[in-house]
Figure 1 (cartoon, rainbow, N blue to C red):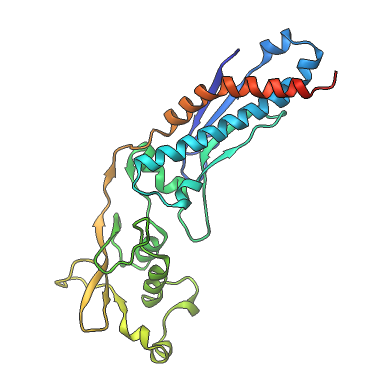
Figure 2 (figure 1 turned 90 degrees about the vertical axis):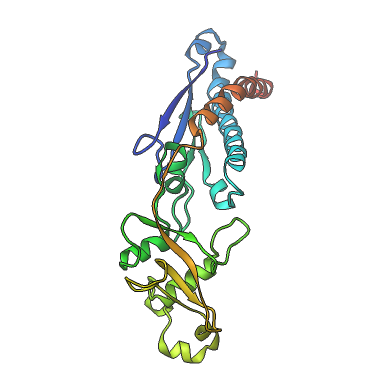
Length: 263
């Protein structure tokens, strides 16, 4: 049986999406087609397309399992970012790619790019807002600090980020920013206020929060971006999984197609 052919894509290549890698698998059954009888020829495109799609789904599962080992408790958004483009009988190729996206969030392919290729991580959406406002220096990112509220995955909660952006008047929707009138209405607003220390302050650069009891603590600190070494062998994992699974899946798919074929 002819083997699979692979096409790796990244940074603008075929199958590339939002900064992430992609692996396309193609199966050429020309030699099988020449040797096949009429009934088999009719079943080959459908059987091959289905086998390629099954293989992509198996590689998707293997990739998500690998991410669970490489990263510390990856969130569902990250794992769901591993998607597939199924094959059809008219398009005998299937792709496994990182293209997860949700409004207001950084595309999965973009923030995992340095984990696959190495380099610096992309800024998160709230970091871009801080940079645009001139609060976060160019080439810097944030790390959670003592005042950060973290979810089970170790990320700052969306609610606290919204509060912080609102308090700093960085919300895209101006009506969502805290106003003097809203501060008077809502006592809880007065208890917790976010601020960025002025240049020359004895406080470390970052976003700080007043605890309502006269104390302050940092929510996030500003740090220079680090250069990451590749951690996730995306291409190798997908190719190994596909090479291992495709022969059996193709045989299964073709067998089912022939069993159901009209003679």
